[in-house]
Image (cartoon, rainbow, N blue to C red; front, side):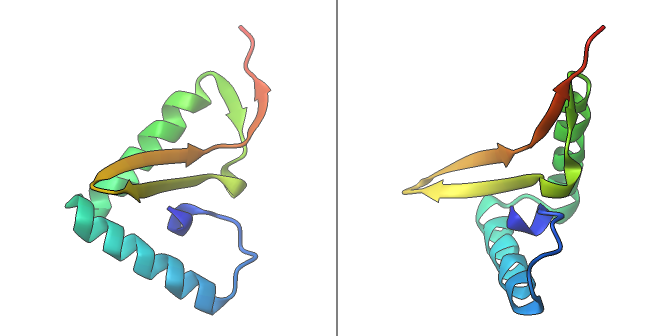
Length: 83
């Protein structure tokens, strides 16, 4: 979610709104905060094997569409890792 956005440009009111959104999504998805954080870290780890990513502007979000949900990740890529 925007809660995971590491960009520090937002003010305290925006941060509070993002945290509230995160809590609401957590309640709807019935996933613990620990599990959400662990999932985020695992996604970063796996993608980081193939790409140099920019963790500063990384955003992971859960969107609701009707009765369904989507996990959306916006992960800025710096370069492809070459072997």
